[in-house]
Amino acid sequence: MTFERVRGFRDHYPEDMMPRKKIFKVAEESAESLGFKKVDFPSLEYLDLYRLKSGEELVGQTFSFVDKGGREVTMIPEATPSVVRMITARKDLIKPIRWYSLPKIFRYEEPQAGRYREHYQFNADIFGADSPEADAEIIGLAGMILDGLGLQSRYEIRISSRPLLESILNSVGCRNVPAAFGVIDRFRKIDRDEFFSEISATGIDGEHTDLLYSMISRTVEPGKIHDVTGGFANPSVEAEISRLQYISDLVARMILSPVKVDLSIVRGLAYYTGVVFEAYDVMGKHRAILGGGRYDGLAALMSDQDIPAVGFGMGDAVIELLMKEEGKWFYSNEKPLFYVCCTRQESKSYAFSVSREVRDGGGATIDDLSNRGLSAQLRNAAGERCDYAVIVGEREERSRTATFRNLVSGEQREIEYGKIGQHVLTLKGVSVKKA
Image (cartoon, rainbow, N blue to C red; front, top):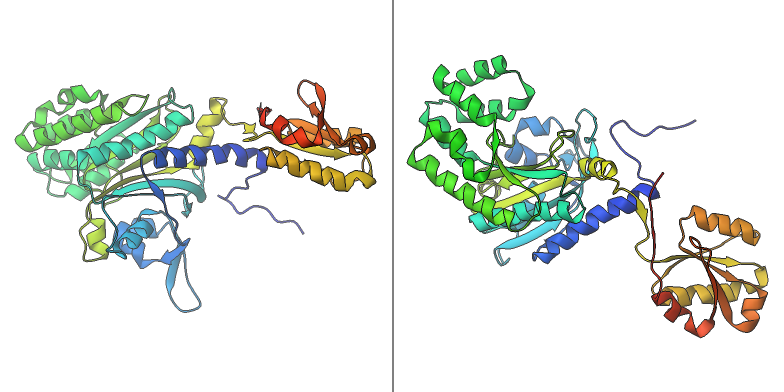
């Protein structure tokens, strides 16, 4: 009997986990450079947590079930409710709070390129700060991570504002702003006639529907927002435009890639209350790389506390596609990797001592666990993508030395036992690109 992997899920072999580990490392180091602290939470939550926060649309995508105690629970489909639950459970936390997390997320969606039913997701949030500077820091962190992965030529940050769009919609007689947001959110997935029909049903007349369609069809520089909003000018709109431009300026000071304004971005989840943003592949080959925004009302839904918040989530799937296309998805040893070869059983004890000296010097070791010949051991060392072989046999044991061979250049040196750690400190690992 053979078993296949469940549809929509992935296996991660070592050659893919190493570059994936780099994603996590860059994300965590970027967050911690801005004072964020890591948290974690269960992979299982009560289903009502998502009914309250995200509505039935998201609940319909959950891997949920009734447990043996009769409780409706679900594998977490996103991180924000869990983090807000943790925040509201503690009133002694000093605000603003900067937290990040790296859970696995589960959603029953149709699998496609860059989308799976289980994925890793990096999340970062700031709680207790209702300011454009907090918005900019979160958006800037997202860009810093992509820059740190070497993707600065492949993405741009696009920002929008739900209050700005709401002011515009109210100014043109929209009777159902949430419904209008839903239509705008699907703008790039429906044709023009369908858009006009659905947006008109919210109470917007034909002339303003044309203006609205033109506005959300264009992505512009922050300084040119008025080029697309000129037909909707009023004091409320102007105030939101000024805030958006200020945020954009701050973000541009943190990252290497462009910041654009795209008013078709509303982020489908209903709890967003302010600035919203996404990062896009500039070549247009993939869905959004990441996204987030301000959600000031969520804590009040779950507790008696009113805590402003802004955050984002970044899955690993689209990042993997971009890194592969850019030639940045390859196996690399974080520290020099040494394969310790032993040419006879009687020298195994000495070989173990040599391995310890290598590790004490900052290297990583793979000890040969067989009694194969040296040639077979060296082939295995190459297969393990080791940087160096350390050869130990009767001669080395008798002279208290070890022979170090560079597996790339073939250069070989005999090192005294007491100087092994010092020698390892002078060596570096290599990066090996996947075929």
